[in-house]
Image 1 (cartoon, one colour):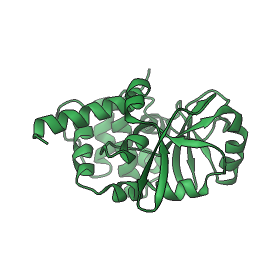
Image 2: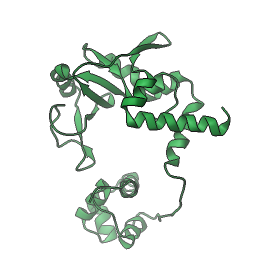
Image 3: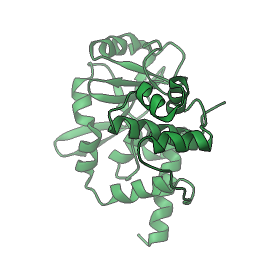
Length: 234
């Protein structure tokens, strides 16, 4: 069964609480009288825990589940509001963007997605730097990933590792590296860009108008940001 956002959140909560207490999955399984395999599947988001099992897992860690509701995707609105009060320089620093760009190999690349929107002033959440790369440079990129302990996102297990590293192989173009996570859009030719400058650095980014036409995720975040501006009178 495909993982839903709620199943993913529950699994992440169990994993976070377990790791905070420095428990292994086996130790938690013994405390809660649940199989280690079940805990592993719950934490990966492969299995929706039934309420009694979830309560036993949490009780074994001296916590309990509290249920509440909020408007759909309200967490995104909260992140947009938090980012809106930060100067762009701080948004860039929090993302670790400059350090990553300084370490990437010398081949053509541009910033795209929510990263490009953020650099153009929109305080949209960015989970990881997003770059566009040409397919012809994929081997160079793969070598860089290998040199920087890259692991590719494994959607089946909801974690990094266990799948082929190369962009040509099936799977999401999303990797963890020594310098944090990076996401790539692979293309035959790089999209048209504009230059934006912050501090002493220039960035080549895909323009907002193009992002809204070609990137569904960035377009949705930009829409939410503009809606927040309208409702707040900004």
